[in-house]
Structure formats: C-alpha cells, structure tokens
Length: 331
Image 1 (cartoon, one colour):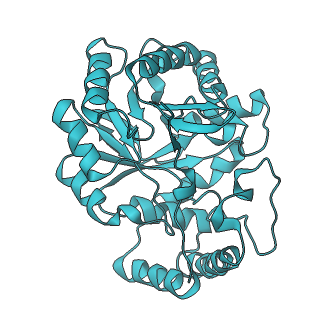
Image 2 (image 1 turned 180 degrees about the horizontal axis):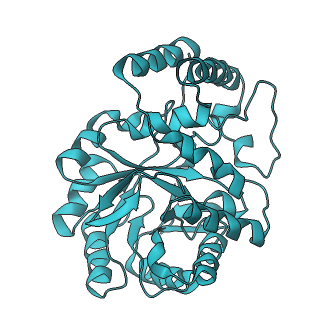
C-alpha cells in the first residue's frame, strides 16, 4: 500500500490525494466499461485513497452509480469518504447553475439513491448560482446537515465574497477550486482566506485535464466526444506553448528528482501552502500507479522558482478553465 499523506476535513482523516471521477462518468472523456470504472474506484482504495469526489453532472448520474457499486462490492462504507456536489442542471441547451431549494433537495435524494448510502461525507455546491441568494443555499445545506444526510459542507468555484456569505449562515468546511502548475487563480486572496478561516482546499484538475499527465505531446488531436477538443488550452497556438512547457517540465522532473511529470505536478500542488487535497482524475486503475511516487519527497523554494521560470518562458498566451463555467439559468 502507498504510504499516503493524510489531512483532516471537519475532524475526519482523509487522504491528501483523492480520486476525481469526472472521467468515469463517460460523457466527456470517452467511454469506459462499468467493470473498469468500478475497478478504478476499488484500485484507489487499495492505494490508500479514501476520498472519492463525484457529482451528478459526471455522466448524468453514472459516476455516482459507479462509486455506489464499488462501495457495495467492498462492503465497507467507512472505508470511503464520499464528496459529491449539487447545484447544476442540464438540458439540450447546456449546463446551468441552479441552487434553488427544490433543485438541491432533489439532487440530494438522487445522490443518496445512486450512491446507495444514507449519508454523504462532504456535500458541496458545484458552482455559485447568481440567481439564488447564497444565504438561502447555506441555510438549506445546514438543514441537510442537521438531518444527518450530510456530515460536512463545502463549495466549489466560489470567490472569497461568496464563501464569506456562505460561512456567515452555515459551517463551511471546504472549497474546491481548479489548481495546477498552469492554473493559479487561487494564489491571490482565495488561498489566503481559506487558510485563515480553516477551510480545506480540495484542488481539482491538478494534472490540468491531462496536460500534466505525461501523455500529451505536440500534434495530438482529440475525438469530438472528448472535452479537450473544445478546451482552449488544447487549441493552437496555445497547445504548442503548453506542449513546450510540458517537455521542459518533464526533463526537469527526471533530471532533478528522477520523477515523472505527473509526480512533479501533483507534488507541486500538495506543497503549496494551504492546500489540503489534490483530486487525481482517472478512469482506469493503472492510471493511479503513479500515485506512490508523489510521496516521500518535497519541492524546495529553488525548485518552485525553476518551475515558475519554465512556465513564464514557454506559455506566452495562458488561459484558465473559464470555459467550464455553467450558464446562468433561465427564469
């Protein structure tokens, strides 16, 4: 078993690497069989990962169902720390933020059913709904907690102002933003605010939607069913810039530490002050084999500065993950 680093969320011990399950949902990253997807969840547990992050939007419920089946097969609910989300709806026109009371109650019951459990360890608002007051959202999630259906409360993609508004009404235990070597928007006020207010940071996309996974290279193309086919980072001329950075970061990881690029990338996230967890996306068990190489070493200030220099010299036209932002709901 991996010698896993751990941290705590609302007093519960969790692995510092969590399994991100967007990929096993199957809609945005290419298909994967149920058996392989379930094996990926069980493989995470075998590697010392107990935090599994999912959401109804991932495969329109399939990801939660897969996680639920994995828990059922293992037969030990306590071995899993389940973090799921609410507040997104989808239809033929796209994806919309919706944190109305009716929608959140419907999503909670649906998630509990698909996961096959009577409680969720960490329940997160997936995106802020600008048409619903945050105080109302926080009050309702606080009610879910008092009912015993959720044990801790979190948000994702929230600003400092939005987190403060939530925390004024209900306990706030975590924030889940995008964060990686290329996407550093939280390095301003968000990371400092979370640290000052004892809010755990769970970083999604530490491998930057596979850019830092060690498999992406110049000249690659992506199937139209793959979300990377519309991701601005994977479009020229930016894609070549990111690929140049990847080549130099790969060489740096190998020559300085004898490590792979994903090991370097996730170690970078975990070594940033205030970061609690990095969510490692995978849809096959072998994609978790590199997890062991993340632990047992640290990046010093000199290495951090060299990584900064590589990115600054190669990525001249950076762009964040803004394209993922859901639409404002109608009515």
